[in-house]
Image (cartoon, rainbow, N blue to C red):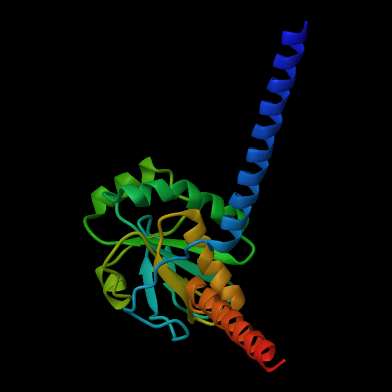
Length: 212
């Protein structure tokens, strides 16, 4: 009986110890999550700069529907450059469809690429992308100076480039919308501003502490 009691006490001690370890790790994960900011879309310093007027185009999409790119209007426009041979582009297609639904109140998504019509039309239909206009234009990519894919350009209702960058995840795509809302060129710029303010406050507190 004594041995059983001792073993039970030891078992409960181990369980409580493990519980404390789990709680400590959970707290540390929370701290790391707060400190490590999500990475926004990587902006490449080419093409029209954020804040500049977008190049304007009047083109027909793969289905012959007339499309206008870069013009002022009631809605913003997300120009998403992709390729049928780009694995990351294909991974992002369900995300684009989801975003088209959640942001439909203010945003139109337009797909863009270049190459041979049959290949793109087959890709367009196989992937079920009929909900999006799909523009096939070499000049479009050249004017925006697209060198890597997938790449997105957010054009606001005034026809201005509001945010842009390489996209590899939903978080990076939505960082373009966040940049527009915050009035900054990118999520990195906003984080940089916050870090600068925090450093200035910290230096001021240190100076006050020394003076005091």
